[in-house]
Each structure stands twice: as structure tokens, then as C-alpha cells.
Image (cartoon, rainbow, N blue to C red; front, side):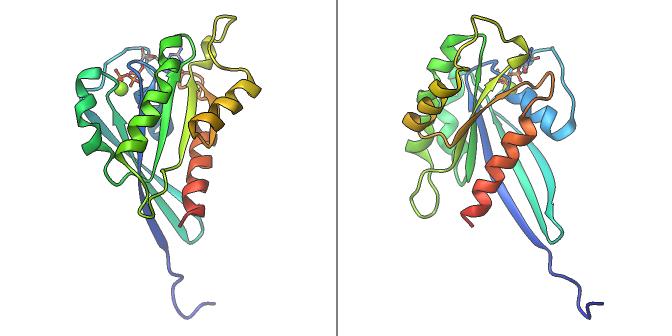
Length: 185
Ligand code: GTP
Ligand code: MG
């Protein structure tokens, strides 16, 4: 028996979720944090917040503060304020809409010009190809080799095909991102 209680380490991480309008950012967060999904579309106004508390290990607790950023163009002037002090990001596109994939480098560039880690390095970013439950011949960017090259060329650590509807791969993507953040501590 220990004479003193074990010290619990707590980390608070601000994580951004960005990408074009209607790609599923809010749905991914709702699935991840509350395990719910709705087909009703209510576009995010400005920014929303969600907190996910994770018992990472017996002596480590992580508080993930998820910033759900509106995809609407009219809010793009605010991203510099929203991005402040973020330590990581998820960029989301919709596999059924090619223009949302074409916009991915624009979102990444927006991040890299407006936020970085305290040591000046770019923040770790993971790409989510969302709505894989709707996958068909017309889906964009799901070829493994092409996507790996795309990630390398555009500074993404990794990509995941996700579905907020079916709850596919969202936990895996979040865990991967947290591991990257923890490595940098
Ligand atoms: P903005 O806040 O306007 O930027 O949109 P958003 O990226 O937050 O998208 P949101 O999560 O509101 O989802 C938009 C629509 O796509 C909603 O009708 C969702 O139900 C639907 N949707 C989101 N994720 C999925 C998914 O994985 N599969 C399917 N089939 N539909 C999804
Ligand atoms: Mg939203």
C-alpha cells in the first residue's frame, strides 16, 4: 500500500474541427462525445464547444476541448481568433462532394498561417474523409496510396475514413491524434 495518493496528471487540450460547410464536423463531435447522431442539419453559427474527458491511463486524465468551427464562409474572418492556442486539429471533408475535398488544402493553409505550437512547429493535423457509409463509385479520395501521398504533400499526419452515422473510425482518429499530442509533451 502506498503511503501517499498517486499523483494524477491532467492535461487540457484545445482541438479544432474544421472543414467545409456540411461535411459533418458537428456530427462527428456529437458522436464522439455523446454517442448520438441526427440526420437533421443545423449549420453551426460561429463556433460550438464540447468537452470529452478521457481516462488515458491510471494516472493520466485528458480533457479534450473540441472547437466545432462553422464551415460557412461568412465566419472565415474569425478563424484567427478561434485557432488561438490550439494544439491539434481535425480537417473534415465529405466523400460525396468533391469540392469539399478540393477545399482541404485551403483549410490546412489557413491553419498553418494562423496557429503553431509554442516551439514554432505546425500543429498536428489529421484528415477525416467523412460519410463513408455513403461510399459508392463516385466517392472522392478513398484510394489508400493516393490519400497517403495527399497527406504527405499537404502536411497531414494521417487520414481516416469516418462515418458519424455508423460510428466508424472516429475513436481511432481521436486516439491517434491524442497519441501524437502526448508524444510532443
Ligand atoms: P457546418 O456547421 O454548417 O459547417 O456543418 P457541419 O460540418 O457541422 O455538418 P453537420 O455535422 O451539421 O452535418 C451536415 C449533414 O450531414 C447533416 O444532415 C448530418 O446528418 C449529415 N452527416 C454528417 N455526418 C454524416 C455521416 O457520417 N454519414 C451520413 N450519411 N450523413 C452525415
Ligand atoms: Mg456544424
